[in-house]
Every structure is written in structure tokens, then in C-alpha cells.
Length: 250
Image (cartoon, rainbow, N blue to C red; front, side, top):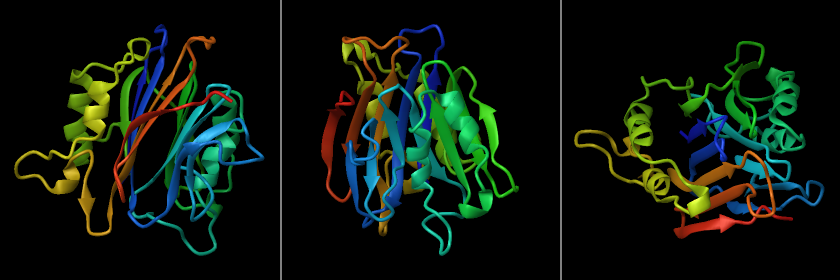
């Protein structure tokens, strides 16, 4: 159950901060975020080596996109297209509104259900494919939102119920100061409260499955030579690597 947190602050110099944990089968091979697609040189995203798509990325125009499974839809299905390609399709667009509008007209029968977040420094959208026959395009509210395999801000999910107060209480990243510690610590935390299952923690591992990586994205209100989108990444499984900054600069 992947988890994504997005903080939207329209009047801030950094109006969008995204934190995301990818939960996946540990043996599903992937590459860290990079420019992996020769026909999409403007895209910086993680590469899923099984299906060729991505789970999270940004582009040179300042659009960020992420895909999450919904309940009961983990993994590929025979005859259906990979949801990871939708991240790349979203990142073909120069702004979030156009990307979300285009994806909202997809043929829902071609994909397993999903939640998708698309955002830039002005707009943010939740694309909800819940096997209702259409993809619902909903604007994201200002402030903090959290989503996993169900509805947005659905605190009936114990993991989200535990995580959301922590993200509200801890300081948001400050890209200008290079201060990412609070959210990095939250995303990487393996601590579950007493009496809670291991997967109530933000980062967990069970038999063959777990949190394989974490990421942070920050989008500036105005991109300049000194203030550009920031993409940070840490890998946990199968081998841990420290947090590092992915250079989105071409």
C-alpha cells in the first residue's frame, strides 16, 4: 500500500511539497529516478523494469505525477495495460490541469483501479479510478492531504490515521535551507505504536513485500537558476541507500 502526502501552499515560495513511500514486492526490479526514456528526455522518474513505466516523477516544466494502486489491485493483470505508463503520459504535459484533463478521458477498462496525483505550482488533482466506469478528476485542497489505496484523507485506514497527525505536527521541508529532516524521518520511520501491526509504520517489511523506497519533491513558485524543482530519493529494499538529491536539471 503506497502512501503519498502532498502539502499545497499557494502563496508560498515553495507551494508544493510531496512525500511518498513506494510499497512493492521486494523482488520487483526498479531503477532510481533518472532520465531513463530516450523519447521523453524532459522526464525524471523512477523506472519499473518489469513494465517500463514509473510510480513517481517530475518533468522539466515543473509537473509532478504519482500513481498508487487501490485496494485489491496490487500487481499487473493479464490483458490490461500497466498503470505505470500513466505517470509518463501525465509528464508529457506542460501543466497539471492539461495532464489531469487528458488522463480523465482514459478508457477505464484498459487499467486496473488506481489513485493518481498530478500537481504543479498552481494546480493539483486527484484522479480516482474506482471501477465506476469513469475516472473522476477532483481538485486537491490547499493544505495537507494524504492518500494510499483508498480515498484521500481516509482515516479509516490505520496507517493514515497514525501518519497524518505526525505530518501536521512536524515542520515541513525548507528547500531554501536544505532542511528535509522531519519528513525524511517520518517517511523512513519503522516505528509502529505498541499493539499495532508492523505495516502501520510508514516504512515496513513483511514476507516478500515492503517499503522499497521513499521520495520527496518540492516545486518552486517561480523556477530560476537558483530555485528549481527538487527531487530527493532513498532506497530501502532490497538494499538501503541514503537520501540523495536527484538532479532534475537537463
